[in-house]
Image (cartoon, rainbow, N blue to C red; front, top):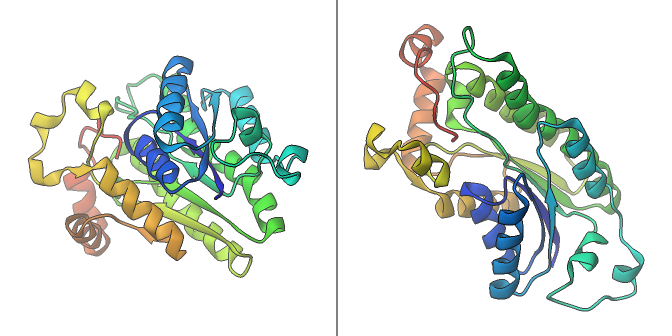
Amino acid sequence: MGTALVTGATSGIGLEIAWQLAEAHHDLVLVARTPARLEEVAHEITQVAGVGVQTLAADLSVPDDVARVAERLRVERGAAESAGAARAPHTAAQVAARPIDLLVNDAGFAVGQPFTTGDIAQERRALGVMVGAVLELTHAAVPGMVKRGHGAVLNVSSVTALTAMGTYAAHKAWVRTFTEGLASELRGTGVTATVVNPGLTRSEFHDRAGMDADWPDIAWLQADDVARAALAAVRRGQVICTPSLRYLGVNALLRLAPRGIVRRVAGHASVRTRY
C-alpha cells in the first residue's frame, strides 16, 4: 500500500482517480479549493474504502498555497510510520507522516475567454494552475522518489494539446512535452512519468456548463474509464496514454494533418471544455 497525492480531487477525473486508488488500498492526500467538499469526499472514501485520507485545501493559482502542497510532497517517512503505525485505515495524521509515492497533477479549468479580449488575470490564474503548479509540485515530489528508488508522476493533459485552441491548448501542450522530458530524465531511477490525454470527458464541470447539447454522445468519455486507463498506464510505466480508440484516431489525425489545416479547423474553436 502506498500514498498518493491528487490535485483537483473533488470532481471529474481527479475524483475518479482518487476512488480507484482508494479501492486499490492506497492512502490519499486530496488537494482542492473547497474545504467542505474536500472533507465530504475524504469522509466518503474513508468509510467505503477503509483507507487513510489527508486533505489540503489549496488554490493552486496562489503561490503560497502551491508552496504548502509542495512542502507536503517533500515529507519523508515520519517516526510514527517507521515505528509501524496502525494499518488501514490510517488516521489523517498518520497519512501526513508518510512520503508520497504517486503525484497526480489533475487540477485545471477552462479559461473560458478569447486571449486578445479576455481578462489577463484569468490567463495568469490558468497558467499558474495548469503549468506553474505542475512544474513546482513535480519538482518537490521527484527528488524524494528518486532517493527512495520508486514512485510515479501522473499528469493530466488533453487531446487539445495537439490543436490550436488558445491558451488552454498551449498549457496542455506544455504538460505533455514536460512529462515526456521528465520521463527521459528519470529513466533508470525506478521513478516514472505518465501523461494522460483524454478527449471530452463527462464530469460535473461539463454538467454545470450545459455542454451535453454541444457534442454528440459518441464524443464523450466516462471519467471512470479515463482514470482506469491512466492508472493502468502508470502501473506499466507507460509515458503517453490516450484513452479510447476514437481519441487515438483523433490524436493520429492531428499529428499527421498540416498545421495550417489544424489552425483553420480548431484555432478559432471556443475552448469551453476541460479535457
